[in-house]
Every structure is written in C-alpha cells, then in structure tokens.
Length: 326
Image (cartoon, rainbow, N blue to C red):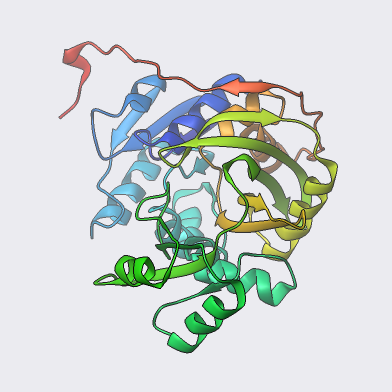
C-alpha cells in the first residue's frame, strides 16, 4: 500500500493536500503531522504524529524520527515554514529515511518566499511584474515614486495571506506605513480585486507539464470564491514562468491584470497552494499528478478543466475528547 505523509495538518494548505488525496483515485495510507493536537487534519488521516514547530531546534531530528518510524513513500509539505529546512535537508533525509520529499531546491524557495526577490526574478527573466523597490534603497524608492506615482502597495517581503499589507495614496501615508518597520517592499498597485487570479503549474525537469488559472475573490488573504475556465493566453504565460523558475513539482503564481491587459505576478509559492482542493474539484488534481509521477512514473498530461464557480465555506470535525493527544 502507498504511504503518504502530509505535514501541516492544522494549516489550510496541509488540509487542502489531504482533501485532494482523498478526492483522488489513489486510496493511499495517509499519515499527518502537526505541532498541535487540536489540528483538524490530524483526524482525517489513518495515522498522525505530533512534531515541533519548524523553527524549533529539535524539528528536523523529530521529523526524521517520524520518517524512520512510518516509512512513507512520499512526503508532501503543507506549510510555508517547513519548505526551507526540508529543501536544505532533502537529500540527507531521503537517503537516511528511504522516502521522497516533494520540495523544490532552496534557491527556488528563496525566490518565492521573498517578494522583492520575486520581482527581481521576473525582471531579470524578462517577464512583467509590478515595479518594486525596497525602502533601504532610497534612490530606487524615489525612482519608483517618480515613475509610477501613487497608489502604492506596502507589504512584508516575507509573509502570506495579506498580513501587514497596506495601500498608500501619497507620501505622507507612505512614510507612516514605513515608519518603524523593516523587511518591507513597496510595489506599484496593479488592477483591482476583480482582476486577481491564482494559478498553478506542475513542472519536472524544467518542463511545464500541466497548468490551471482561476480568477478569485479574497477574504482575509485566502481564496474564498474561485472561477475556473480555460484562460488559454494566461495558461501559456504561467507555463513560461514555471519553466523559468524550475520548481520540483508544483508552483503557484498569483497575479493581477494591469491596464494594458498584461498579467503581473506579485507572489509566488514554490509549493501547492491553499486553492489546491478547489482545483481538484474542477478536474485539476495536481497532488495526484505529482504522486503518480513520482511513485509510479506516470506521465503528466494536461487535464480538461471544467468551467465552474466555487463557493468556499466553513466545515467542522467532531473528535471524541479522549482521542486528543497531549
């Protein structure tokens, strides 16, 4: 029986990966891990284990112990914070534990984690991205203001789900948004919320093998309504981006359409994304594609994507109190 371990059972991403696996035709034995025993996703799988948070000194040792004990065929990463430590230690863990870890190279993770590095990657590759500057370089920031004007977006270079993001309309509000804060990037504001898209590409060996684009509505930084369709021109663009980035498996590109009709990427995730289970609902199960390719050497083919409107909602998991591990 195929054994798959999913990290981050308390995270939207980790839970989405589990849901995509449950929707697939694989029927694997599922193992989940998370730092908290109150993580709902733990109770959706056949087996679960508690591990420290990824920034804890003992995280890698404890995670390695779980891999040795469970012997999964494949590890799927369900949180951002685990990407870099697992990317940096992937070869050693795979060799010592006899498993495969689906995580991109550290360089790819760094580009995706840092929004200014994302801008530099797109600029240097000759792609469109929102014009950006970092406050530490006052000349570049002044050039940005002079060239694109206001409004501008101020956001953390490293972060997700719109935390710490603000729109500034003039120099006074820009100075206020920057005051006392470090690690920021300032970007040209692109389009509107009606022009926002999330997309995914699956790439191995530098070749984009499948892709999907969905227009989306956001709430608290997460996709809560999505609209799938063919979007042929946008799919061609993200396949080109994916091949330039070179992920090992999935990559997520989030972008808006500017006034000239060009897609401009403001965020990359070098992983599956929170909208992964939504994509699976319309025929694009990227988790299943990666599993079949890595474990069974099956080719990846572009699936047909249904044109649908997806309305996201809350749900609940009922667990007997005696089953909660401390």
